Length: 113
Length: 112
Image (tube, rainbow over all chains, first blue to last red; front, side, top):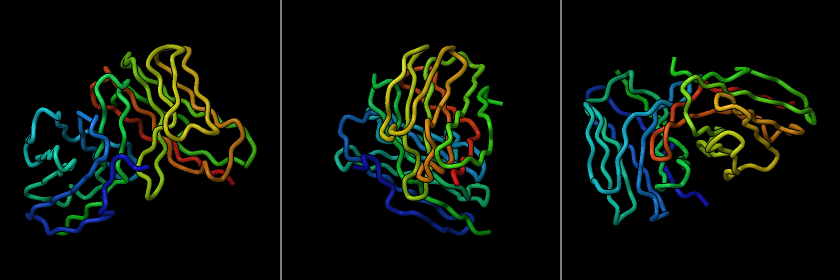
């Protein structure tokens, strides 16, 4: 069973507009959530994270929102740039669980100039 | 650059042969993980280690074994490779159990 789901395999947006990537989870024990970005032929790189005690975390153009009641998180990128074109993975973990991250399937973002 | 190296970067092997992938870190991180990436599945955990000689199974561990005899090295072995193990394999390291990972660049394995 997929505990972390990214239901949109791909997303295309125009440069300068907002990109919204969504992620749903089923395990209410998850208390730490992360987003990773992956370019072709490279390993994923950490982008932004949020603890379950918060509902929003911002870092420059990137903001992650967490809705615990809906078991849903989203990543907003404003404004989107062509260099943001990549695969984005959301991930979740449970405190004290040896740090294991459970990843979603990924969403491929294309930002068109 | 991040102190984590995977080898080899690419490998083609025949069905039924053993294969070992190596992950080497220079960060002295306690936790190490092996994931595989497949289309439609994202990243799935194979095995992980929380210390020297301390390892455990992930969600897709069948057909794989691991060893960690030193802090810096985490080996993933496919005892008898199958075509279903064709994938991109990523190693990751973490400083604590509540911290994000640093990933290696990956190993593309093709089993023919």
